[in-house]
Image (cartoon, rainbow, N blue to C red; front, side, top):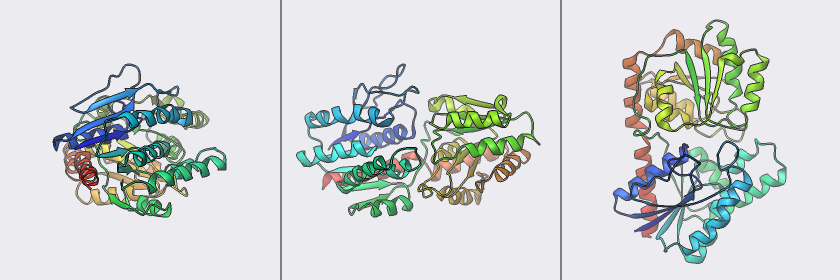
Length: 383
């Protein structure tokens, strides 16, 4: 079977979507299928990577951090995509990754060429947009585009029942499969190093994450545990807000900000950290989401401190029945400080961290999720 994967981001660019799609492609190749990946040219210093798939790239507009983000960036990928997909040797099925504008282009071209497509609705973009400072008409337009992309899909894959509910509310009536979520065990292997007095927040920090709660909590934690550091590795529109809050609380010298790094460089940070940090801001339309960064941390063997609502709480509570996975607490600075103190005062041993990594790899590997998604793509193309 010939299968096309469409995404503005792909390996080796460090991002959850890149790892996920790469794993799905690997699963498709292992089944003997041909795969074409229509994606963007990687950032400077990176080269396209292929493990048997045909990676077809094209230059796009990137922001100052090197990320394809914002309407100009999306359009620089989506407009040429229409022509690229039209002239591509006809695939049996297409797997498309958001944003919704990309999904809309795929729907129109696939309708013309009579090709079914699978839409990866890992989250709902028009929900996330409500947390940004954008005009209401922009959100309404994005909602309409997202409905259009979802309703045309032959099959939708997503990570949780919470997203399924939102997909149904947006009018999608076709089959939806919950695949769960996981981390790539090859990219995030079990790794244990000598513990350092550092908390690591690895990944994006957008308004719905509410990562500034860690600045407030860490400032209170430092009152009783001086000498520790808070390290943000990743990018997001919230960085100026985090920096301003750290300055206001007088802890600027204890907080680091590092641009995104590939998994091979991130693993050592997680392997030596006291814990990794993840959050979902309460009272937003995104309360149904997983804090996906928790999975890579668990796979490495690094305990997670999660604050906020959502299914990540259940993930950690279930994991703690078997291994020492970390702490889930209320979205409150005092609660965060107390959880940090608990993780530092009673740290997991090297053996316990290793056991955590092995447990996570067995129960929450990206490879198992990718095989599930690949099966959906193959079945959709077969029909």
